[in-house]
Image 1 (cartoon, rainbow, N blue to C red):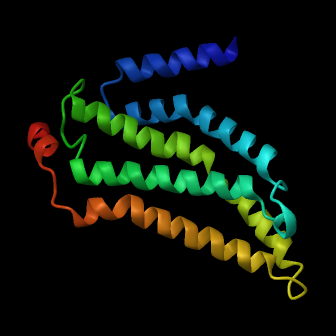
Image 2 (tube, rainbow, N blue to C red):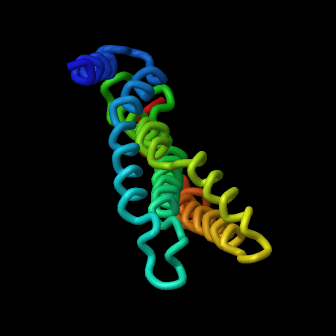
Length: 171
C-alpha cells in the first residue's frame, strides 16, 4: 500500500509540477525500481554461471554495468544531438523527451549500474594477485567494455551534424 501511495505521488508530481528539473526527478524515481530489479535478477542468475575457467567472472554485475553505461550514453547522445528541453514549454515533445531521457539515465540506468558491487568484486579478486590475474582481467574488461560501448553509443551524436529541428521548435 505504501509503495502504491508513493508511486501515485510521484506520478502526480510528474503530471502536475511545471519545473522541468523536478519532472525529471519524478520520472527517475518512477523508473528506478525497475533498474534495481533488473540488476538483482541479472546478478542472482548470472554471477558464477560462466562455464569452464570463467566461472569466477561476475557476468551479472558486468552485464548490468555495461547495459547501464549504454543506456546513459544513448540518453546523453539523444539529448545532445536533438537538444530536447531547452526552454521548451511544458507538454511539448521536447519537454517530455528531456524528462524521459534524463529520468531514464538517472533513475533506471543509475539503479541498474552497481559501483559498490563492482568495487567489492575487484577488491576480492585483487586480493588473490599475483596468484591469479582475475582482478586485472575484470577491471580491464569493465573499463574497456564501458568505454567502447559509450563511444559507440555517443559517438554518432558528437560527430554527426546537429539536428536542429527540436532545438528550433524549443526556442
